[in-house]
Image 1: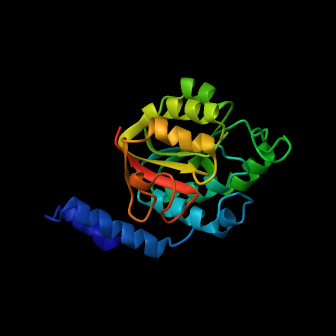
Image 2 (image 1 turned 180 degrees about the vertical axis):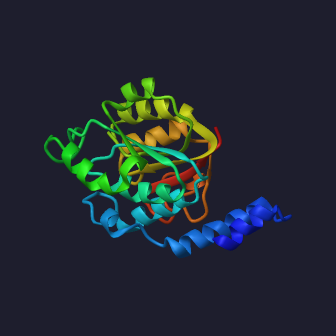
Length: 224
């Protein structure tokens, strides 16, 4: 990483894309996986999906701003937040923490989220409430948006309507449970078709939302 930084400091005529790729390779080598505390939080994400989100977040610009809808016990927040901490960024987490729209009974999961994300300190910024209510009052320009909340058609439509306008052109949008949740699939067709390009190795728009390296996770670059 120091060699890349030195190239930037000397302002040598190295193409920005080349430097970016080199930085990504170094990040993958030095920070190959999230810390242990992040990987052991209970979640519906597979280990492969956790790594995909982590590696994607490592590629975000410095001082990045990310946001996730649907935080549950904090597994994705820990994984994404661990990478964002390396980029000197912030991760906003939006949830009611009452376990609504889950396949388990409603309960207060806020204490568990707090305990699980405590190692990340100020990197994680929680917002307790309904996604659309939080969106009305939170002014952010997002480099990364991860939606894994209520999977009903109405809720996904509302989440994408509320948060996509806050994503920067060229920012990253990730959606979970694209392989089985009809509401998520309809939301993708309505809001993202024709507005995204694929990242290498991740589900492409031409095959949305099936196929790709992780059949239940879609990560794409948002064109705006």
